[in-house]
Image 1 (cartoon, one colour):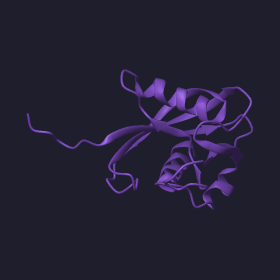
Image 2 (cartoon, helix red, strand yellow):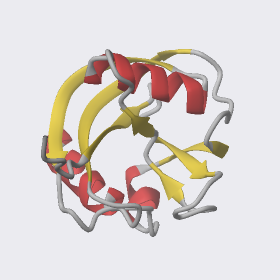
Image 3 (spheres, rainbow, N blue to C red):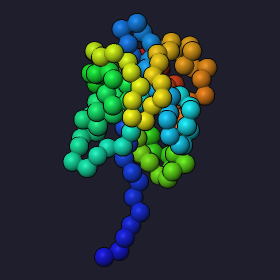
Image 4 (tube, rainbow, N blue to C red):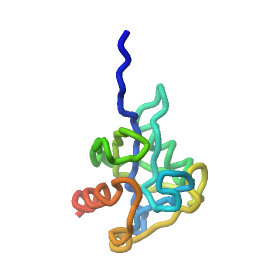
Length: 137
């Protein structure tokens, strides 16, 4: 049987708080170690993308979320220096939980839209954020 290379599947979330801010994590690991990013990560085998984003957000931020909508699929082969990773990004709201960085995050913080737009985010998260703001506005 011929072996083919395939992209890996990830999820991300643009999460709004009740105060109208967006939740970000500071990355603990390379690539982009020390950079701010949207919460997210790899989809595990046997898991839906919806289950994956809820799990990843809880693991990285301590927050429980409710998915509001699909924002988009981001598949540029150069979006991640580790290889071809496709992300499915969701719009979500924080429903409960105290924010506490864990697993792949050293910090978790909330920023206003204006603050977030000035940040140099990891991966293609600036593009994702711009798309989210267009959708929300």
